[in-house]
Image (cartoon, rainbow, N blue to C red; front, side, top):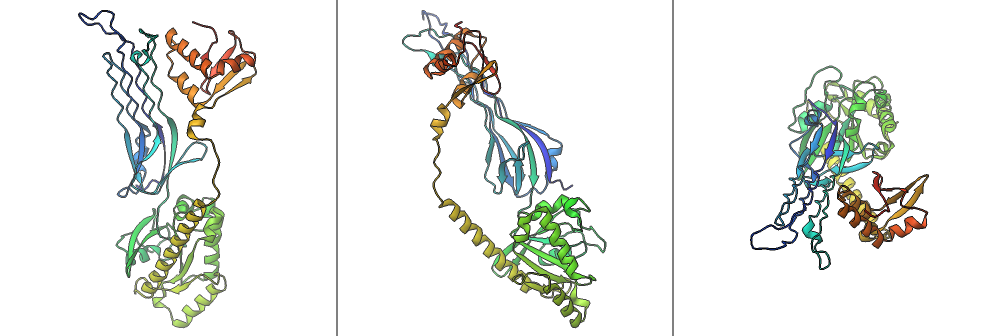
Length: 429
């Protein structure tokens, strides 16, 4: 079954907790702290797999979670790191969040990190110093990143075949490539996109047969809106038109309108138009149909007449497609280089962003935000007064306590750290 959309929950592993422990060995008096750190939670990666062509597996596995890190142990033993989760998806899979923002675009077989595991918490051995010989505080492991991922498969191809049902797209693909799509003399024979590789001269073209479009496809009629997304990634569009159409000009204009209503970008995509099934027609009729098309097709668009069954005009068409694809790739590379050589962007360094914080008063709540302080808040064991006092000392050193007091916060004030609302009090424990 061909499935090109799926919704899954991604959860990276939680970091293990640090441990409070002291050495208790024979002949060793007043053993020092030896609580180990927690292990790091497992990361989640997506990796493109050329052998996959559908997202159907994710319909039966909607929750994907990496392993948690192990807790620290005595004798300074660090907890085991959680095993990473490697998720295989088809090449061309787009990963979006609930707001429609793009998280990752899987276009290669290189693994892409999409959810980072939580750091493990420090054990009490980590806090030993010359003035603190017996620390009793430890840190909790951080929760791994989690989100709902909307997977959307968009086929990556050099050439996308578009046109009405029965325009000859599947027959063309079966003749010029080794693909074996279903072919029959009725509308909507193709119920899923098919891919094939066509060899011409010293190059190869990856061609995608998109299920037939009809008028209103962009609004959901027929099968079109379910598969139009697969046209978006193609470098060149090959528009096939049945020579037996009563009005070939209208057929061309209708499909162009559907593409434009789905995405205006598709109307600027390089295009080649081919009149199909010409083997049984008189030369005069073919010329007349081509002239009707020339009246509506842009002047720069190449126009061909072909017969897939009779292998007529295919080599010339494939050579033109190869030329267009090569030119499209060259332009895309040049555009990337132009964008890369633009004006430099001045921004805070990652270190500056990590250390930045702010205090904002919202009605009766004082909200403290900032990457570093929120991280300390998440790792604080609030059931352990030694850990809470350590967090307070950190906030004093970062001048956050000073800013809170400056804005009117007292020991009775409602103070929260981060958007998750970690409670904090200025009162010493």
